[in-house]
Image 1 (cartoon, rainbow, N blue to C red):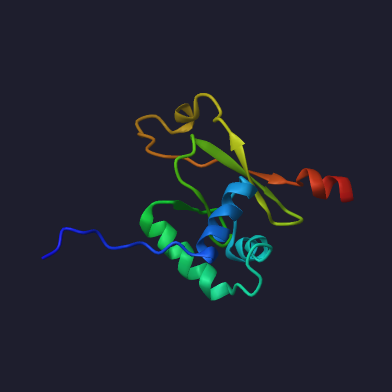
Image 2: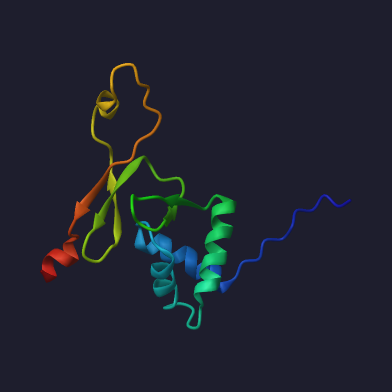
Length: 131
């Protein structure tokens, strides 16, 4: 049996998809990833985006962002604790740095808070400017 590790292929498509997340600096849905990555790789398909998202999740490069009543989005792992702002007009999601103080105090007496997510909703700066 060989001690060599399996070779991970580095492709132009994967590079473009990873770059989409780095450049956007916010959670992205599959269609947003495709739209951004198409600039670098014309002809890229949504099936390749989905396969690559699954691979990046398995490899720990991405994590899922779950928002109530919305399809999953994805963001790079390793970010500091943060929350999200969802624009009701364009449906884009943005990171909010930091966390409100004393969130644990909101739990009822005797309860132990294990995790939390704060989501703000409204209009992003682009949609506000176009309103």
